[in-house]
Length: 586
Ligand code: BEZ
Image (cartoon, rainbow, N blue to C red; front, side, top):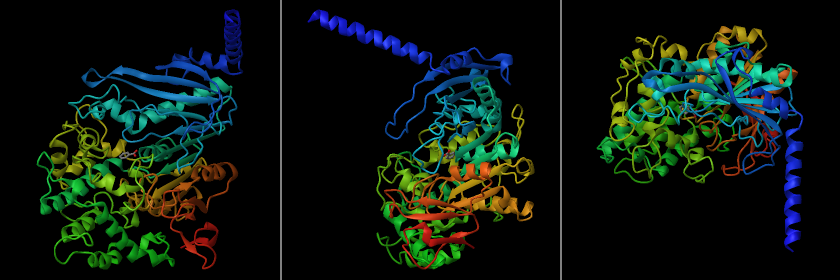
């Protein structure tokens, strides 16, 4: 028996050795390993080091990760240096090169204030079940020049410590995307022996800002760009938009005497989930019918203005004490103030107003989605935080005090990340004077935030000329970056291009959708496929079919997402659950 066991173990070990040897001889594996020797003059930036290059076998689908192809996985870094306060900085990147390459390059945009390397699987956005690597794209992701695990000083705004480092600021703003694109393309050339035939940049939110930045600052790099819920005016959205909302909500907390444990107005408790649902129902009552069909989707959102919503808000305003069936006048005033957008004392709009839409509510939808409650309660989570939170929680998000003080204003300043300070900082912002800090330079901070972090230029002629195509998808109920801002930008681009911008830039609005996904919306769509079709086959997308997810109010419902300013109209016959019975028109 012992002898049998012994011979079984020897055979198994031998088989493993043979399998490993065969695997390490897989075509590509030697080439992959050779990338580890690359660096210095062999790459566009000589201060680049490939830190690892490893051949990975194909993997079966696991949970939410689709099946992955056999590929070479590369880690690298560039411009390693000692920065302000002796912090160590570098731009780190993560590249995956599939064995069966489709000849295309995919840059996966970041999120929040970055500082994470990213998986380099290639998120296609639109809740798709596959990713770019699975489709055999060469995919890169990166940390944009700082590392949240390292550059994270508790007394200097935590993970926004990099805001004190002039170079790290620029790397986050625009420089790292340029550097990593060049490095990735060179490594692709080294590995496959040819450059990519097509290049794509895809991202949402911060990643959407990066995507737009590429079309404006580096128009030659990408053939197709997909910018979802883009934070192209990120500093303005934070310094003006978020702070304004915090101040509006603090009025509700003060009027109703709700304070947190540090004595600050408790914003999380200014509206219950039911209060927000009441508001959402009022908006629906005012605006659902404007597109000709009462289906729970406000297709004609442009027409859903403050004036149209006002009578319904008035109808749900308590005449006496606050009850669950009505909103206190101070709550209605706060909503109206928030939706009107941040203004200075002269009444000038500083960021953008917000689109009235039903996505403001959401408690009737199931909680506990894998993406977090923000998936269905995006508006409340971003603007005020979960009702049950023991502390004020919306004030320290990426739009909050740490980022506003250290990253979005110059010179950078510190604010404690806990206790009373974060809220007090936001409530102390003066909208007549804070704007100067976006345009300021100070000593070694030689570029103003308004210039290097905003991707709001409408001068896209170089991108257009090289045949680039840009698709923007934005949720109408996005509480982080206002679709009104995106529409304003698009109108300006269209004006600059004498009304012909649809030749190269198209905007698709998703009614009800919150930030990047979620909300009562048809938030599953293949905008990336539409982009590739446009770039490679010249088929400009007039509509992108979108589906409502399983936990939406209408699982499986489909709708066309229309090129703005067109919107989906029911053809007056057929199922209202089917996109085929809708047409896009103005
Ligand atoms: C995001 O990437 O989702 C994000 C970026 C900045 C502020 C808020 C959200």
